[in-house]
Image (cartoon, rainbow, N blue to C red; front, top):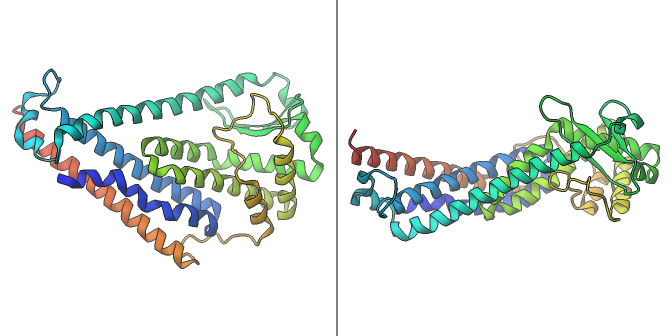
Length: 317
């Protein structure tokens, strides 16, 4: 176990170069899935190692509920500076759990509040999953379904008045792409990962952008015009800069960097291939992130197996 238990706490740094390069050179669908998978794996490994440090560092403290055998010198010797590291790990792990719990609670409450805020007649102005809400504030967002219910595309009447017919179709297609791709799940996963390890904050930002780009590309396919979607994105963002009502859901419906999204839509459609990357810098960053993720997973596994073996030997049945 030794010092290797500390590696997963810092190895998320290996994924940072890939975050920006992936959103620039990969198809946004591929970038979203790749970054979410890497971020969640690294976050789980770092959290597991915090738990191991807490067990090792606090086993010898008086009054703890752990078995007496767990305080043997062999257990404490598995980690350098075990007592100090364990005490620090208690506070850090508690903060991580509190932050992740707060994020889940806020996410759940926001969705529930948005669902309750929809008036019974919200769907009369549209069809199917489209809910038109009478409001003087221009906004539009995708409200994911829950408990077997389908998701809804919520658009205010003020936003519809700001756009022409083609731009409305692009806007609705964009929000429907969010629902079809279940983008809120990718965003929630990366939010939790960033809460678990602050080194993963750039991945959360990159995924927030790539999900919007993913929805932009799907909307462009639906309406048959990348320029029409670019115009709709720009106009909707321009009007939605006005004070918006509480129905806006920034936690999983962020607008993203609009100028970059518009510029990307005016460029040729990105390739859907994941490997090999066209950019050599991205290939190097991907290899670095893969090695870092694998090293983090192996270090966590090694530390877990080592500690479980020692604790099992130190604790008579």
